[in-house]
Image (cartoon, rainbow, N blue to C red; front, top):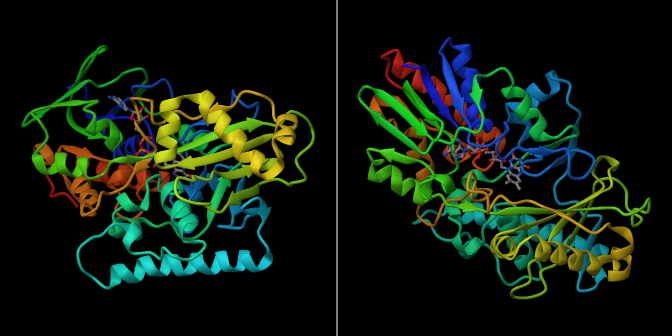
Amino acid sequence: MDTEVLIIGAGAAGIAAGRRLRAVGRSCRVLEAGGRLGGRAWTDTASLGAPFDQGASWIHVAERNPLTPIARAMGFTLRDERRRVRDILLVGGRRASAAERAAHDAAAEVWEAAAAARLAAGGPDIPLAEAVPRDGPWDATLSHWFSAIISGVEAERFSLRDYVATALDGANLQVAEGFGTLVARLGEGLPVTLQAPVARLRWGGDGVAAEGPWGVLRARAAIVTVSTGVLAAQGIRFAPDLPEAVQAAIAGLPQGLLSKIALRAAGAGRLGLGPFARLGRRVEGPGDHPMSWMLWPWGRDQAVGFIGGEAAWALAREGPAAAEAFARAELARYFGAAEVDRSFASGAVVTGWAEDPLFRGAYSHARIGCHGARAVLRDAALAEGRLRFAGEACHTRRAGTVGGAWESGERAAEAVSAALAGKPAA
Ligand SMILES: Cc1cc2nc3c(=O)[nH]c(=O)nc-3n(C[C@H](O)[C@H](O)[C@H](O)COP(=O)(O)OP(=O)(O)OC[C@H]3O[C@@H](n4cnc5c(N)ncnc54)[C@H](O)[C@@H]3O)c2cc1C
């Protein structure tokens, strides 16, 4: 054997698993297909002249997130970000009045309460869209915001049970140095091999063998942390095939998409807005997909636009030039096209999570009726508990987050370690 445990993927789950195995005295090797640590937590320090999180940027549910105390202890600079407070909220072509803002906030409370109440009423799983109000002036906007943007999928295709179970609450912290910087630093010192894609994983009674263009590595156990998008696309071939229940769980947890389109200010003017300014607008009719914006985070000259769901998939297919044009047209609704041309340099940074075969989307959601799939994947204990899955999709409460991926990685490491010791899995 080359090592006790192979970990496939050096994102948050893989790093957490490696650290936990090291802590309990097990040897491991992390095989990462890409050229860096952190996976979907990636701080790009090159493109915009200051840290820019291409993937995760908020430490969600900060009060219970394992990375909050770690970030504080490591001296990272954190900022509490309130939900839903928008510096500009547009209605048609104008700014919302105080009464309209109050109506928006009240409708948001009703929207969220309706989803929870419908779930509590029992019955089979239904699309989130059927559980929430649809006829009020803000309802389409709230579905767009909570589902398409935050969860990366339209409410029509999102399991109500999964939405409620994985909804984010509590504080959100931003990291000045970048959330990706934090995750990557936590992987330093682990035995990681970069540029080592695993093409095939053989598993059976006598252990596991990972194969790739770089060669073969054998171990007593393995933890697979690649996204469900990668698993569904057979980015790794398993021999023998995965059991049908595991394949069904993977198919039930497709990746949604959240994309960021970031522009850089051309001069010192800041459109009259302070650091961390938030912009959003009402959905103006069917087929309207507003972006959500954060301007000048940490006083930097960056404007970061968010687009999620089917509009994001469409832009990913059309390419970065179309995405930049879309983002500029969105900003022009607030400031006018001439002001946008004056205020922003040409050239945008457009994230590519959909197109990248190492990710194939942003994070997972459950299809209607597939809310139990996360537990199936989390609890799959193949080869007598020596082949396990971990990652954001395997967390039943904090799916889609770095904190969820982290806890999932730790849990899988403990389970694999117990299996190697001949103890029943926790
Ligand atoms: C745009 C965007 C914004 C987000 N915002 C937030 C946020 O604000 N807060 C938050 O908590 N979360 C956020 N998330 C989600 C968060 O980034 C993920 O949930 C989390 O990082 C997933 O970690 P993971 O370890 O499960 O998977 P990954 O990070 O995907 O790690 C898996 C690793 O496996 C590697 N890999 C793939 N195929 C192979 C192969 N064949 N062989 C070897 N290695 C392979 C990949 O390169 C990757 O490094 C966001 C994600 C995106 C995309």
